Image 1 (cartoon, one colour):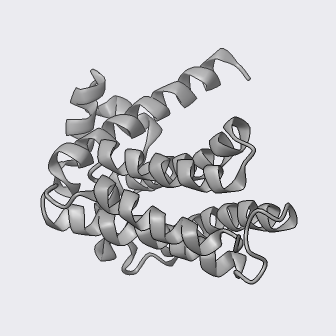
Image 2 (cartoon, helix red, strand yellow):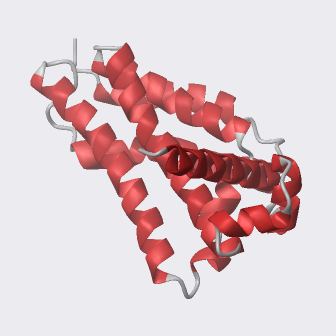
Length: 200
């Protein structure tokens, strides 16, 4: 990769991260290329060299968030061999990501962002389904090792795990941060993990 391309990729990442921070601080209305440029420390025209406009920048933010979700699956696979512990760590990595990025639900679950944009809707759907499949893969491996009940459907169990985080994240978003997402996840994990363990 040439230096020019590397610099372009780096700048795109900086602008995307600044846009996500703008969403975290002020919601979707806080995202303008001028505001993001100020965060990065460049003139607005520099942003337009990398993104054609706000919509393309938001697509990049969505890719960043979906990439972090997918990356968390890889992280737990590298760090832990026990499938139940992998699932537990993955759950709390997702919780941590949402706590650090309070704008996350406002991006992923924003009807206005996907209304009239089937490509974006498909990308978000595909990203969540890829995340589900990563979880289901961990569950299938646990079943093969005899550590997770064989009568649990991996895809359904994966959606159940996702279902711990997503409604809780939305409630936290709606409550302005009052809803205790981490506490909800801890309590829900006890129920979820017990449903996966083989009978003694």
